[in-house]
Image (cartoon, rainbow over all chains, first blue to last red; front, side, top):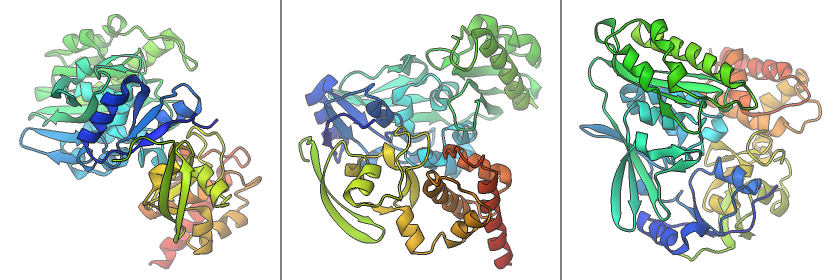
Length: 280
Length: 164
């Protein structure tokens, strides 16, 4: 189908975008890359009165490395993350996740901020942001605020963003020495949404895990950490022994592709591969 | 800044020609190219970004024509299958598709040619696996992809030989 009627606005600055969002409140939606929102419009799952197109706000795009972190602007396109030498060097977890995000033509339009603000439970980037301990920078009428990635994702397509707020960027801390990360995803076909995926980051000094942050996606209503598994790995090198903890960490729901039991099984297999790769 | 509006004036370059139109904000780029400009080589299949039949180039990069509004292409440079064909940019790919019988009904072919040309630009000598991976966003319901991969591989190899 085609998108329903809407009024289109293309602000040139964050201030203009915020003014539009404030004026139109719940009747407005932000149009970032549009690779999920436009299908939702075409399916008539979403029917906002006003679309606020933030594609021409230059300050929202780009990747910046500072002394303490890598700042990824909300309008940074997937293809830029995929090709960025800074991301490959500082945030290899993101670099290895990008080829799994849909297809090249989608990655040319889709954005980092759009994916995070939509909070699809099977999307890669929210889990990466959680595993790497990123902080989201959000702007509203009253100014900017910061939200830790773990607190940003609230549930199925739900985030900490309030009506009238705009996601500006995420700040990823530079990795500490001795820390490493690994990514894995299972999908029926390359580029499809994940049946299950995992992002892991932590210290592997002396061949033992510590300070692990392990985030799963595609197995619940949002990207989520596996606290039991993380705790069981602390100071250990035995992956297989710790994987049983996932029974308590995850409560996957069956979907079109897999039963709940199969998803839990796949999560263990995948986490096993990823963690062994990480500590190898 | 203009207030939100249901119709938008746009000016863009399509296949090298300047175009100005007033369009409904809800009109996607693929429909704009087909219905306003009569460039019907861009096909509309699934209308939700899955099939790849509407693939066009915007500012040099392939995108889904159904997942972008014409209003967003204001000021952009758009290339369609007609442009790539007329400029002979994809001549070798077209010949290879004919030779290997890489199309039957032809519905997916414009999108696949757009994607194949982008692949060979970024990765001049792809493996068959890489070709399949790159084309995972383009559906063909006739060929089973084998001949499509053959055609793209043949062009890559011919180009590699020539550049030696």
